[in-house]
Image (cartoon, rainbow, N blue to C red; front, side, top):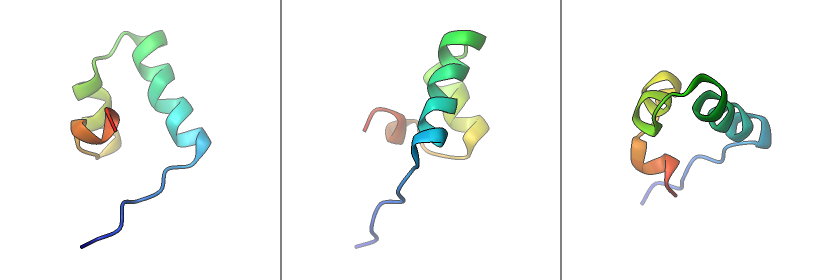
Length: 42
């Protein structure tokens, strides 16, 4: 099994800011960041 990729604090904050400040959906942000939308809910 492949170990999950660790995301640093700045990466996570950037993702949240995209949703809250830019009004993007979870799916849109995940696509922008090149990760699975399921990862956003993890």
